[in-house]
Length: 266
Image: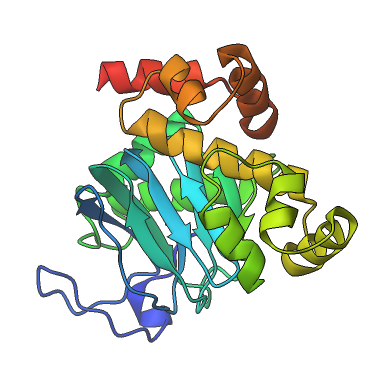
């Protein structure tokens, strides 16, 4: 679907150059310092959170996603969320008006960003919303939308659900690397069987699956802070580096060494 001309729709948006014309899709650049935590907010545009550098958390009332280079996070329009950065992150967010593109970025999820889409998003950030209908920049954004529609969202990475049960949440916060279900159950004053039932009802996920995803997200954070794969595995309490690599590959479809290598190239 070609981008409509500004006269075909009514969203009142003014660019930084003072051009009072609507833009149905644009890429905006944000740079976040280490430790940045934004406020919860909503907006009418759907959004792809995509860091060209670093690691960004997308936190919703239901859980947390992690966006990394070549892995973006979709936030549908009007969904409450906030952004946090584990390191010095360079973010290129793609904003899409759902009134113009109702079938693009419609559900929360991870999205695989191809090298081509990566470069197009990077280039589009340079002109933000300062482009004219039928210009080269206009066509570039058309291609971005087309690639987003066809992007691979069948990734094993998932949202880490929020643990709402107060005793279990406190037990997890104080557990450190000791994440054995029997220990968490004991700290929560629940029998192991009751703990398993309560945890799944609370999060929609078995504890062992939640723990695996939590370990991978913690590992991603440490890796993007510059930790080596072996140091990350040790800090997370894995018995061996290979055990961490196996879990990481199972959850993300890639090895932690690819992140370590990318960090070294930046």
